[in-house]
Image (cartoon, rainbow, N blue to C red; front, top):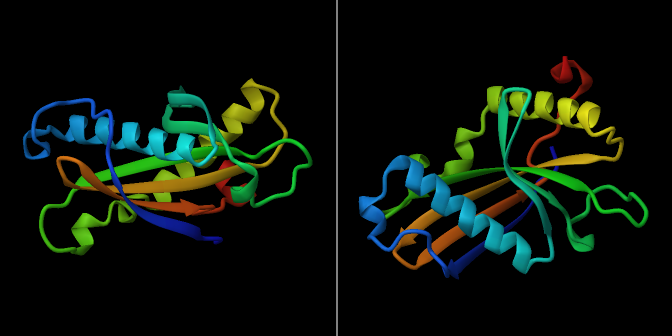
Length: 162
């Protein structure tokens, strides 16, 4: 597993909802996290290709192309395609294992992403490298979020594609 990760605490701009984060439903927390993740990626030079893409029964939160600095595989002039799982939690107290969203990306979720990648390659006749990233977001208060971007968070072998 390659984990080149970056951490940041950022003021969040352009929130989707105007109510306090303590009043968010689980679905609203997820949407807010995906919005923050998109802002984060764009700011770092990624190109967002799709959001909430459903393929092979799996929803991929964000499909993006990496910037040159974050590319793990040299693919010439082309940039890597990155399938990104976004996990978000509200974290108003001290850190516990429950507040680290990345722990929710287990082997089953990784296998689903592997199936989605295989279907993506087949549907779109895509043959370049695909990278799997995880962005975990902790909503600290109404305008501050902690972001942890695990670049190349997991790899899949050919057996997982079956």
